[in-house]
Image (cartoon, rainbow, N blue to C red):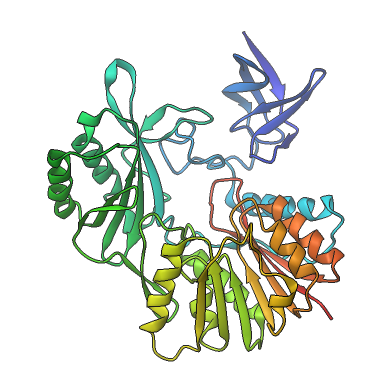
Length: 413
């Protein structure tokens, strides 16, 4: 059964929302002001499938990818780009207001650059036991086989063909695979997850295809299978050899922009703590002018940071430590003597660390986050401890998605 709805607004995931007598109804790929024809989604009374746009918004544009709407990787390719950026800034403002914070929020900075330098493709057996390699369908577990992805950086060129080849090489294991790929200076770095133990034939097949597909390294759950060249990246003044599956910002442009904002927020600080530091995208740049204490729970990332710092001339000392900052945050007494603290936690935020910072006397805190709600929560904790939120900058490295990166600068007089 079909029905017609008028879309009044967008939800926080980018879905169109129609306000009906039964309550809000969510329609993916619909825009405010549009009249649409939809059908029910079984088991989800508040959701509808979009069948047709009867009256289109003037802000509707043609998607850049032929897989849009079927592949679940993007949510907003149908919407004019400048409106997406305005909307994302509004989401940040709403998150701050939800915790009672009022601070200047800059215009959204476009950080797409050349595109995504990381991607995780999935390999699954679908109908009739046919192997499919691609991205997950929208809000579903089955895989949409793809042959292109226009939001990927040129450094990931060939990743889809490589993922297909890897999936076919380990097909005898008959297990669902996640194939995580990162573009590096020496080729693609691939970590295969979900295959189970690899037998000799599978290892030989993977080693053979590494050369054909310009793969720097293949690992299985971090265990080395074949390495043709060290998978390395320039990080500020340094060169970092990446641990398998390590976290990086989604785009190279975003890493640079975020690092510039962090350095501006730290100002003339002579001693800086970089918490949740990863492989050092901030620490290695901060160390050009300041002594840095860096910490992260990922021991392999810390080892990579130490190696990069040791081999880079002209840096001030970096003391890097593996430490679980959720269970063992830097307490207020440990923070004495720091001129600035930077923290860039995972999506769940840094609540425990924020509470200790709120008790400290550190003059400047630069908070970086990929989740606006946990950012707002942590900023509220700091504000309650006497910090003033001087400004917030939204950074858009997740083009065509509802996600936004945030940098906030807080100061204590």
